Length: 251
Length: 197
Image 1 (cartoon, one colour):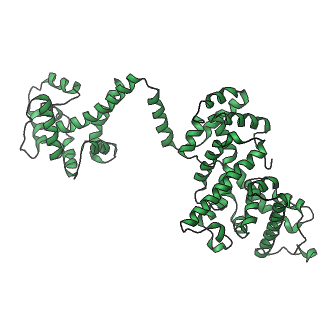
Image 2 (image 1 turned 180 degrees about the horizontal axis):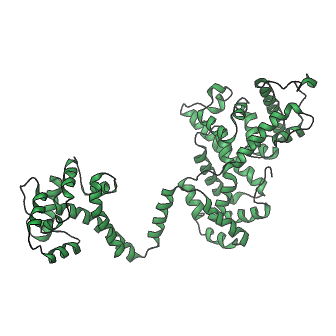
Image 3 (image 1 turned 45 degrees about the vertical axis):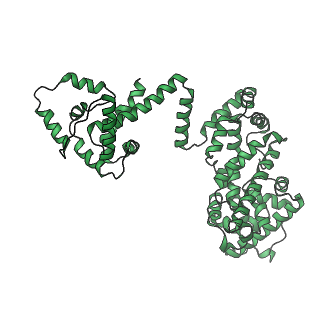
């Protein structure tokens, strides 16, 4: 065994330095040096959401603003720019940006946004209901609502494959009513009369119908969720969803 | 730069003042400066989720910034003191839940937790990991705080609540132990230690 390690030698070893005249410690020094190098090269971990909020917003007190103003020197401002390099989960970042955007809206804009979101949901549900593709309980409830609003009874179609028939009907129609079509396109609240017009859409609904009917317990919310999915049915529905979703923005 | 800050004393003072005033950008600078060392220390000492615990440590640090007075070296001790206490809390909590108590089991390398192994692999070579795991808890605390956290003897003494002389003795014994372990696991180079045998 070698001679005792002095305090000075210990300090040198812990710094990863090789000691002259102590070749028996060279491996130890090299090992510590590698460990120090790896530790020094390690980057900061991703902060949790709670800490990220603190890093972004500062302390939840008025002192934050004063602190920002007091130290806005050029060197520190440059250093502050590097704070953007902190890794943030993309989802948190996106949600935060959305929340900030909404928070920055005026009251009227927020009301309009809420109305738009509601309208989008209603339009999706309305399109599905008007198309008659909802499952029996949901379709029944939809028809009740429509009849209450419009004062008309929905057409009861005993045909197990209504949309194929409707499509053929439309196609057989030698002179489709152009005015009616434009009305349907502009109308955000479909009614039973629009049902045949919806079937003017070049044929996606046969597949949709079977998909929806297979759903054991669908409802409007579920369908909107399904529209986010990449399943085949969704693509068809997403057309309606996309149309509806663009309405608030355009407004 | 051992035990101090890469940003320099003058900038550190400015950043600290801004952080004590609650500025988010100053919090971020402190996070960037110290978080990797804190995470490395926590991982190497057996935290199951060192990254999350590092965030918790910094939330405490930011909450207690107003009570700190000192320079960059003192601030490093301040951060690691909080980190060490949080680590002890986590280990005790795991012990109460019936999980492996790292502080009691660590002397047996066969019982070292996988999280600890993973953390050590991130901050050092496999060889270093095995060597550090072979040390006593006190020795390992000192060595990790010196090597991974880059603290001075005085800072380690402050973090662990011991006298500097005790830290020096611990690190000297730890290094002697490491040298012995390395000698046991390596084929000696011909004539390397002849003069000392």
